[in-house]
Length: 79
Image 1: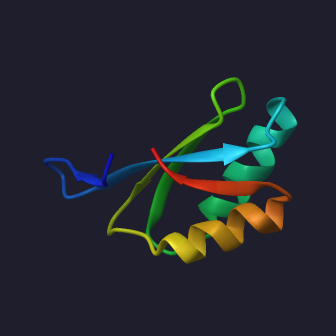
Image 2: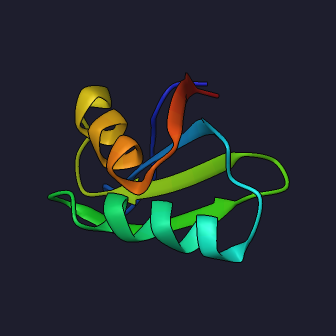
């Protein structure tokens, strides 16, 4: 899946992250990605390993990877 732009101009992208197993993991990943420029919301789901990010503009995947690494997890890629 590639990033999609909705009618308000926001971009939604879904990433696969390995290693998340609980709510604390979800919070750590969400907290790091939220700090990236233009990010308006992040929803991490440990049970699926998916992280949905809504931003004002497409995000650089390497910036997302660095944020996920900072949280202590591994970005597998986009879903």
